[in-house]
Amino acid sequence: MSAPEIKDPEIKGWCPGARKPMVSGDGLVVRLRPPLARLMPHEMAAIADLADRYGSGMAEVTNRANLQLRGVSEDAYPALLDALSALGMVSADAETEGRLNIVPDPFHDGDDSATVRIAMGLAEGLLDPVFAGLPSKFGFVVDAGPARRLDGVSGDIRIEGAEGALIVRADGKAVGCGVSDADHAVAVALDLARWFLASGGVGADGRGRMARHVASGVTLPEALMGDAAPSDPQAAPAPGPVPGGLLVAAAFGSFTSDALRAVASAASAEMRLTPWRMVFLPGAAPPEHMATDDLILDAADSRLRVAACTGAPGCPQASVETRALARRLAPGVLEGRTLHVSGCAKGCAHPRRADVTLVGRDGRFDLVPVGAPWDAPKATGLTPDDLLTQFET
Image 1 (tube, rainbow, N blue to C red):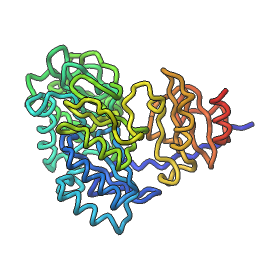
Image 2 (image 1 turned 180 degrees about the vertical axis):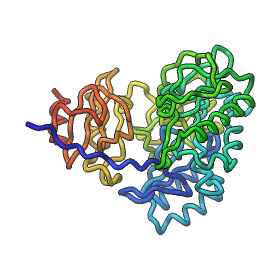
Image 3 (image 1 turned 90 degrees about the horizontal axis):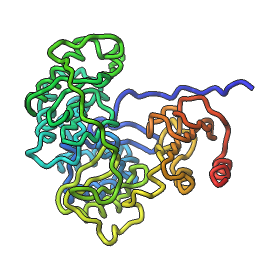
Image 4 (image 1 turned 45 degrees about the horizontal axis):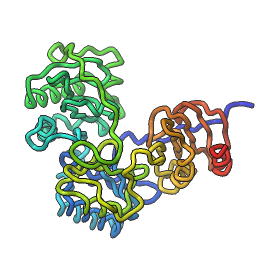
């Protein structure tokens, strides 16, 4: 039997924003990039109300520490944009918004920390029109604390801790350039972005990533090179009490409006969106009751072992529903194992290997053991009932 034909999914090459929403199967996807990935409780509660009024009542925390609303109709979008502007959640224009891709370590010590000063400096520097040519997926990771937690977070220029010091590292390079302080880190990071643009890092299609550019054999300028290795990476945190506060998760990073309100009511001050698709509440303790079963505070919850994209009908590229199946399969995923239910071969929710990957194709599923969605399947044409039977046995 010949291998099944797997159609290449459409790759957009850009991320949605508030000024530039993306059309999906369930309406517009409107992504918010709050400054420093930080929200106050009244802002989170207001966003929950807007999700109900103008969208599907759901909001997703993304792996870039953004928050996106789904199911917004084109007719409702102008009123939503006005409301978001009144909250201070919208950049001046789509071009500026598209290049403010900065992921800070959410466990920073506040406004005086190196993380905040670097993130704010980058946000200000990126307003310069010289950076208008950066691809919309090009991003900065600010991992400047004593514990390097963002090693698994996608980024092109990384500002990292290195045994008590700071370095700026091009993604794809094992070592980086030592810098003296936060201001120096911002200057070197922006110089590295300028070099990326000037040295052909952006293709004719407007796309480009630093790791791919570095792998092509280009040589960094001596002033941007170095031999300092970052500190050893730390494991990604789990939901529940953590040093300094509380991490709150939802299955697949998708929060109902009621869940957002419950998170806001539990916060003692600001809340920080995280690239692990959770919300960090500094200074908060676990409440006796979070007022909704949609939230996860237990690191042993089996739903945390499962990644699932929006799937059909929300995503036009998916031919299968994903999250309902993922919820049913989750109890059968053993501790230490991972399951990825992907609506298509693009694998947006988990673009890497999992112990078991299920890929939607023509209304059914292909099964890829210990692989990624684009790898060759071991079995094809499986129904949800077939998969439930396999997981039960």
